[in-house]
Length: 135
Image (cartoon, rainbow, N blue to C red; front, side, top):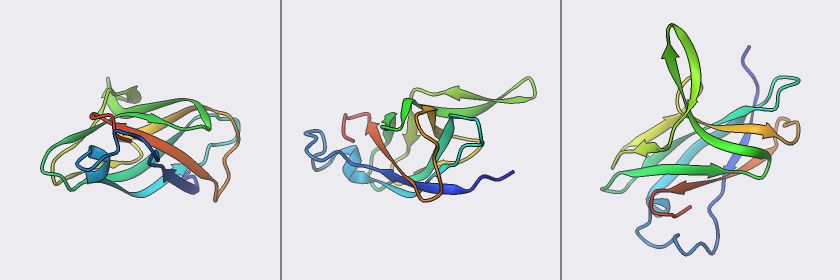
């Protein structure tokens, strides 16, 4: 069953000294963000988006955080002995001039122990941090 989608706002941190000209945050745009609604009785969900890198060097997302869940992790799906399983990853690579697509069944941001029931139209502010410390 396909779940309805809710809005996702990936927030840049104002006043972050690492958010300076030439930073990863300056060169990576985040497009088509959304968070899946949780099935009844569940308190985990995934966030998805397309990260586009306009820089001439590679960048990496190394962390994600949000105020609505106790834990936020970078994840992927892997096939282990014929079973699809989610696993944390240390980083999400975004190649120079390329993009990284976070989507169901692939790379995504996992929200664990979500503190409230999400509903259609809710905004989930997520801050991502890059390898250079910019957000």
